[in-house]
Length: 385
Ligand code: RFL
Ligand code: PHB
Image (cartoon, rainbow, N blue to C red):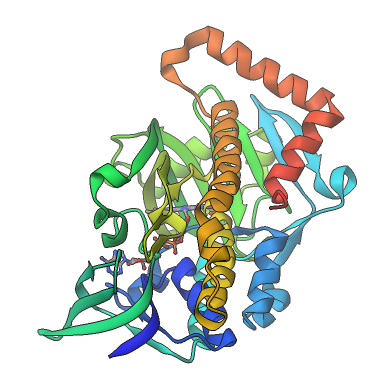
């Protein structure tokens, strides 16, 4: 088989790239290790920047998002129970959309016309410095696809970055000593907007998927096990970290999903190796505090799609030559913001009382300074490229 672009991974990055390319007339095959059902079962991000919404429209996949997504014009920050609303609309005239990654993925799957091969095992990338080809195994049979380009959209644990010679890659990493324990519940959200809460017991986040489904998180030690957390223990811990008035409004119920995500900052440089390109979590990870992971992945593939369209249809390398440098500038800004939100809102056992006083001063500065709030608002809702 032959195609223009083999895309490894059918997460939001791979599916969006595939869709933008097929709409432009570029041929693609997506290879995904898991089943479609499994991909849809992963509960991850929930907040879309305006640029991501616009990209869903460009992909002709935005209909349900506009009907069911929730426009949010601000978020609430809380520090030891003291609350402050960051009003995106008043500060910078922007907003975000609450719409789950699962739904983004479902909508992109539904519009895709070209081939996606699910349960493709042992994907291997060959000769991406010359004439690239990719092999995979399906139902015990090995297949080969020749192509012009390979897009590595296969997440942090994927094969694409791992296929690059170590000497060609520089990585930057920070692993945090904690993770997020998340619970999904079919109860109305505790508040209209998201609440990011710092508390001496640790960070907590009140998020949502719809008017009837909520997503809550609490900071837990990195080595914590989900089996140690009954629903009752989770709700007690969440209430303890919220402002008492908010806690009193919390509607609890049986969890429909419960999992722990480790927190990490990670960037691989560069993003291009001959005819192989990395995008999304394959190239970088942010801690989820700034709600940037999914948006960053979509930003990467928007740029990569334009570059590949130019290369395949117009025979120009200008876009693919610039991709890595341009994307990394955007990525590092999101890394900085995600690191900053994480530093402000979590407890860091090793920084002690001094660290907490600094965090409090940062919160007080933020709540007292319109400039600081504007900075948060423009980063959270999405910086221009
Ligand atoms: P994905 O979504 O990980 O998709 C990669 C796809 O590649 C497949 N794959 C392979 N396919 C073929 N061959 C191989 N060898 C393969 N190896 C892997 C995988 O099965 C998968 O389908 O990456 P993508 O598309 O770049 O999208 C990025 C986003 O998923 C990610 O940035 C966010 O979800 C990050 N993230 C969160 N972001 C937020 O903004 N808020 C959150 O609450 C949030 N929670 C999370 C998260 C990421 C997590 N990870 C990576 C484990 C929670 C978790 C647990
Ligand atoms: C979520 O709803 O899962 C969510 C929202 C905001 C974040 C992280 C996760 O910053």
